[in-house]
Image 1: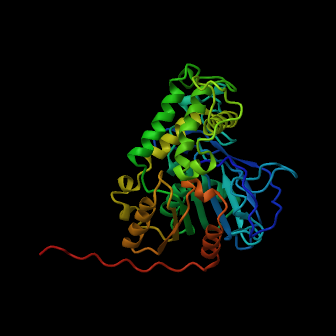
Image 2: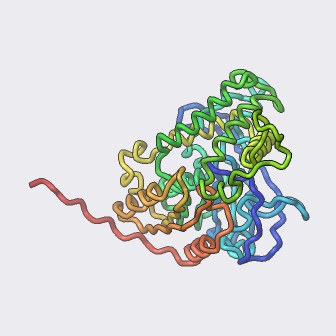
Image 3: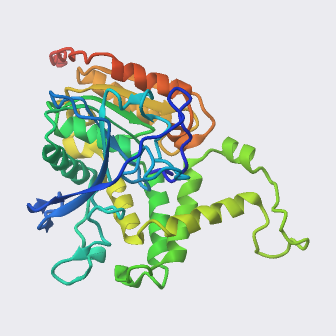
Length: 399
């Protein structure tokens, strides 16, 4: 649920050059049944890979992106590209996720708009975009589609799954859904359930889109649609990815040099206003409004305790060793929500640990330069997986 569209600087721990990569499309021709009961006759996932698969086919790492991200998590598509993948500071030769050792896979989620099947895809039955006739998507649907991609790639198991925000939700779902297939997970800046506040933020964004007269009930044409509503949704959401301290340091109350001397108007006057408008305009050029509706609704429905009866029960089948990383200034998915995941895993008898990094950069902290984060990820990946202890037997608390 975060801002993945930033230029990620090269990691100081790794080389100054990035991998050259190219996206690929996996087309599944088998019917896919969504949690909602709706179906597609097949689907497409756009993905990228980095590094090489070993002979045992068990050195793969699945990277899961957040709300506004996509499959391009590392490297560059051509020499001299200004903008590398959104986690290029973490993934690459000699970096924390070392592509000299691991085969890294990142796919645009089902329901997305960057090459994977979603609302903007063409419905073969009508010859037009699905729009809001596309099946409703859940986090579990996203993960199940990724698992089919893994089977296509011939992976015998997955060494680790990692991601932040919505990517962390997917990592948790991977460990629950395919326990014997996943050895480690690293959810960051994550939660086991969307809070009322997070759902409220999502709803404001959706209303900005749906109240835009150019939304047309989701039936807008390609290249058109609710551009104003989507930009406003992005502006509002982007505020939740930052922190008060980081915004004050970056912008303060500084005014634009071009601001009119007469302040009694509604033109851009403050630098923070200009920044948010830029974020909104950049977003509408690369993201589909209906995908925004679908993915935020998938986030709203994510509640492991409700889905499995309790949070501990949701983790009962998990075999993966887990490292959860929280960030002190994250007020969207704050540290206590991250710790709750670890406590429930431990109560379920699983091997889990928690690391909390002190930052003032807000929810987006997991995307930014951090030697401490690099060290955590590198150390956790380098350690051989340890078997989980047997869960303690249930005790009868009746008198």
